[in-house]
Length: 392
Image (cartoon, rainbow, N blue to C red):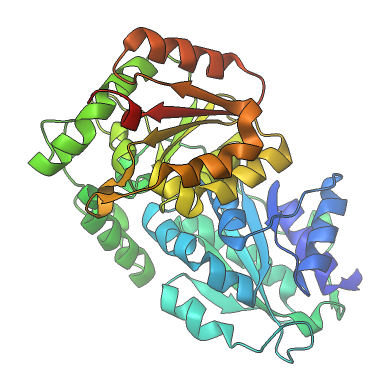
């Protein structure tokens, strides 16, 4: 069957059971995303920022659903922060990033050569060709699941309407079962304690050696297994961690901040973590993957820096995500620089109906009351733990 490149890409994805797709408009990406939506039989929403679009797809892939992020070269540059962290945290099911390069600059502000940037991230990648585009997408999916890493497929946007062959569905390669999510914080939680292990695993994957033989790291107990500075930083959060264990949750995401340390025993709360502000996109992705009770932990600095971009997406999609912002008025993980929380309040002004507050984060009864209301709500909830207004 002869079809445009955009259709061939979409057919390969949908036949391979890719069910989660994100997108920021761009030449080539627009046409492909429209075809994916058509084949899935639903009008998928676009995203506003590529880092968030990638983070949502990444969250879904960690949670066990095959996903694709469809963007242009300039968008890949914006998403690079999240992409770099995804190489440390890995994926469960396939995550393919389709990057359309506007070589002639006819649909872009300027011309950029995307391959050096993609190669510089260390992500596995290749250029797709018109004649082999269907097979190239199949290859990207298979390699992503073999390596447990996102796979980047670069495409010349000018070829988007070119014709190519799509094999008959019953003649395509057998589709492997979608891998199931299994909690592994040493792989999916990006924190300093696991940094060397995750780097060694990544290098082994890229070198084609058996990364399963990489010595697994020690998992410290919270808080006594942490260095003194970390113990002091996490101590005020322990009452919320303890109370949270009584709240139903299926999947919890975090940022590379203090609240993510709840992933450690004896609390064992957070499932996956990436960059500062990444918890909300990851949480949206886990929700799209089918998890019902999804929470995202974030700090006030992380939320102001990038997390609010994900909040826009949660609202756009009507996602019933539950978010806890640990508001201590400082950038704890970078040295305790003071933070003006009026900035956070200004951002949240448009979300007032979803905001709930824990005014005394050391009062177990109040913590449970607020968290239980949030858990039961059929819509978005943003819980602010007000450390700056309580006695610490």
